[in-house]
Image 1 (tube, rainbow, N blue to C red):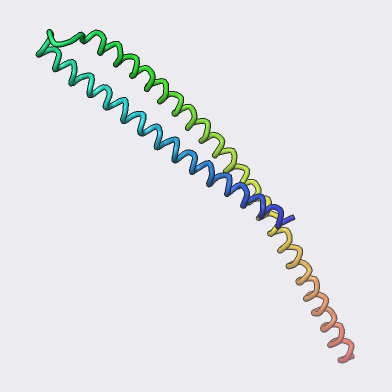
Image 2 (cartoon, helix red, strand yellow):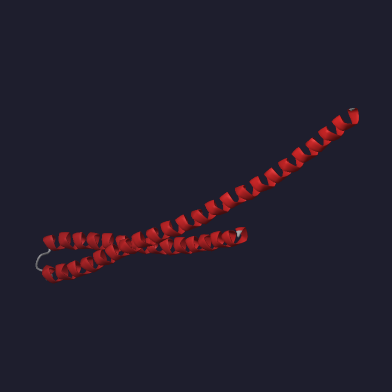
Length: 141
């Protein structure tokens, strides 16, 4: 039984490692999306400033419409990425909880096994002591 629990612990550890890798990728993707949104906003502000100085050069309304469309898409992607990360963290918490459960059960079983061995050893030592006492007292009478 102990070997099976150790195997299950290793499987859960492997699952947890896989989830950590996936989380790292998702966090990296989220950072890229947030950076892209920051750059988009920065570029928009630069264009807005440029147009305020040169209003006759081009149609700022079309540029703003494209900006809003891109911003909305990025914000939706960020929300989805954050939801995916949250879901992944929940999965990781469950896997970790299962791994710890197997570890605790294995620990309890190891302690019970050690207690049985200790009790058997104590019983044997008590028997040896009793036999020595009986032998010592029977020879002195």
